[in-house]
Image 1 (cartoon, each protein chain N blue to C red):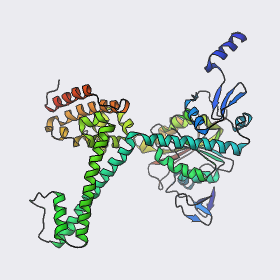
Image 2 (cartoon, chains in turn cyan, orange):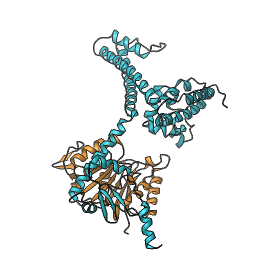
Image 3 (cartoon, rainbow over the protein chains, first blue to last red):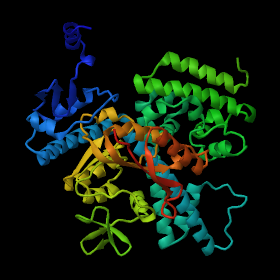
Image 4 (cartoon, rainbow over the protein chains, first blue to last red):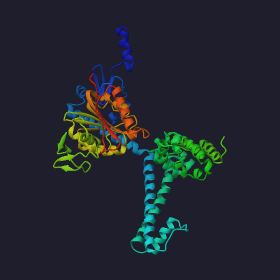
Length: 305
Length: 202
């Protein structure tokens, strides 16, 4: 190829040119165009730089000095740090601004409150039994909240106080559950419509966020929350789990035993689609929901097409 | 590395994570930090005042803070926002840490920011650790050292830790690295191994 033609191509096609983009500016054929200006603008610019890692050679701080971006190495590091802080703070803010970030914390708080309430209730009952040697829970079906109420009313002092605290915790928990459900309906309308806000939110929390859930295959969603059983299955010859968190939904746990796995599988398939619609569209899709509901109902009746 | 008796320490401003102090030296606990465990169990790589480090998987900046006590500059890469908040706080008070919020599996994201380094330290708990190391070694100078912390359980839970370890070493060797040292970090860290290797010249 003649020199003139080569030069012409090089000028026209960016990937043949030797231009390198760095945080402080663009360097091309020994000529540097410094970025300058506001750090946030520079931080946004870095996102747009596409560096090829083939035959890549890292920048040097001397280039930045030659470019006029900084005076010496100490100044180079200081300016770079300023930029990196601005970029990181912006990225953190953006990630936390996602609608699912707060829902995630709400679900985790809810699940932790459940654990705490159960533990405290058990402990209070044991304590109560000491004071009332004839007390037993056998052949009685007193729901835990009533039991706690009775303990509070029938005792005095610290135990009564603890029971009262459990009741208040339960009240907070109920409020929180409502809030989770409401938020889930907003953030993930399609998933919530299929499986209920609370369970939808739990799935999302287990996956680590809505975007993570939307990238999961249906088979993973099906056994989300059945980690112990799944790894026992992978390691040994125990049967694979049929369902994880989605078991909490009535459609799965109310289904006849023999088609529970089937329902779980079909439901998980539709949930995977729903999560993707939620992530990338963010609004309920009535047409999808109708066909999905019908398909899941069909699996629950045991007659699959 | 600086030892007081058989205690590994670093010199710098204390109180980063309520670490123990010996006089004005910060105790670098091998049970908390895999890198400290490597210095206890093996040889590791000497970090000096002119060492430039690329640190992948910086997390909350606990180990980073000790590395920064020794090194010239530490490019600390972390992806998750929560630990990044802590890392930023550590970096605010240590002027030789450059905090980078990016994905270590995609070095092109921070290629416009990072210069050539003498030491590549990787502790990322990802399945394809050898690949990540090889891709990031573009930043490493010829003859530079690489320390890879291998959390074998993150690579594949079904495989035996020993198998994962050997496969990773093989991958590094076939990419041209010269393995200088490879060892398990027990009793400090279970199922964790450290691999120290050198990038060949030229």
